[in-house]
Amino acid sequence: QVQLVESGGGLGQAGGSLRLSCAASGSISTVGDMKWYRQTPGKQGNQRELIARISRDGSTNYADSVKGRFTISRDNARNTVYLQMNRLKPEDTTVYYCNAEVSRPYPYGTAHYWGQGTQVTVSS
Image (cartoon, rainbow, N blue to C red):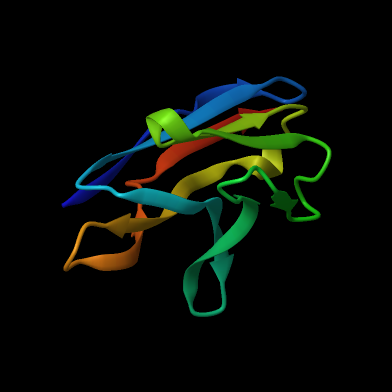
């Protein structure tokens, strides 16, 4: 079994900062790409928007909505990914989810796992 456990989040102020963490644990060989998504309202119910991605070697990508404000990083020894959120805006308020590509020992192979989600609320 593999679990992704998120921490951090909570209440922040516009212009302030928050930091999210997500640790993968369990039967793990390696962790590949790690990502942060956030929930957004969609025509067919809530959807998840990819906002940041980091590869195992540290390459990063960001959605335009967070570029320049949020920073994704990781600690491979701890199988943990972080999201440093600066210059928060009220529209950043939503639930944030981490996702990781995890390779498990034979015979399980590779699969994607999700964290439980953590609420971020930004007051104006």
